[in-house]
Image 1 (cartoon, rainbow, N blue to C red):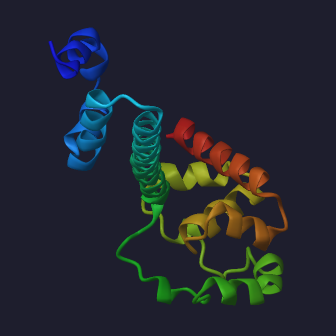
Image 2 (tube, rainbow, N blue to C red; image 1 turned 180 degrees about the horizontal axis):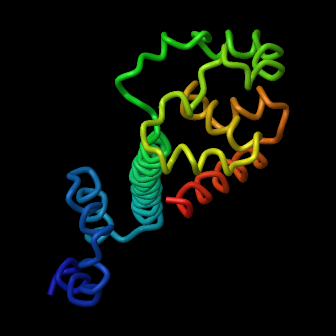
Length: 189
């Protein structure tokens, strides 16, 4: 029996592993492997070990990147889904240009106006866009802060982080009040 046949017989289980099979499917690696089996020397073993280490490292990197892309895609879908659920109260027929504030920078620059004159009729509000009477009544049950947050989120289309800058609150406080306000409206409906 030649060296190759003996080696294949003794190491059948290891050779059937996917990482080894992919390694041996590459001509360069198969040559190094065959050379080591036919002429077992320290130099040939070192070459085979080095080639396999490079192959294994590349396989790990490819696996990591593949998983990273997979989970990033899942996270991206979750964020899009969450944002679309959050935007349910927005009237998509209304144009954002209709509001007095055209962009986030305008909103920040007019922050004083927004905070001092917020409940003045000059500022567009969520209750101006509602047609459902029960939802309108539920909105009256919210605190002024919660109503402000909903206005900024659904009329001005701001994120919680942007709202926190406008109202000088932490993003966690805004997120908490936003959730509580939506829960109150849901319970009221």
